[in-house]
Length: 102
Image 1: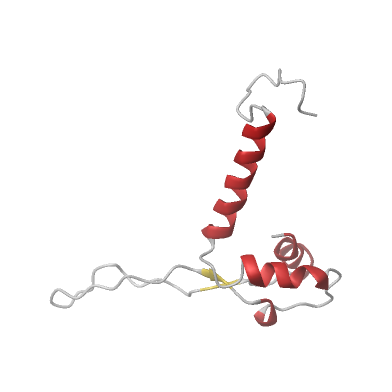
Image 2 (image 1 turned 60 degrees about the vertical axis):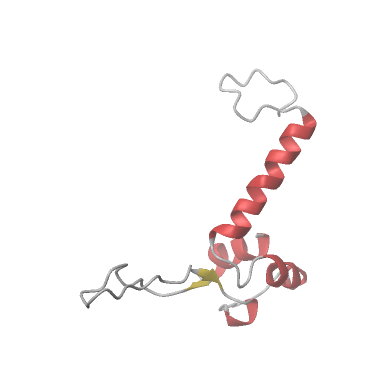
């Protein structure tokens, strides 16, 4: 996700594909269309002006590229949830009373 973040911040790249979606139900007799999910592009298909982190491309291509847009984000959130649970940190502490959080 770091490589992707740099593309958005430094190159203003379009990194997803899937295009506009058709209506779920068509006006035809009983025919409907379910559009594919938007997906992340492969790194070779993303405009890169100056890649200062080329070592991150393999991880991006392995864990982000080609997946539905929400899948890598959901995986990252699940990882953070496991980290919080294992460390005993309460991410929902509204008062910020957990002194283990900086």
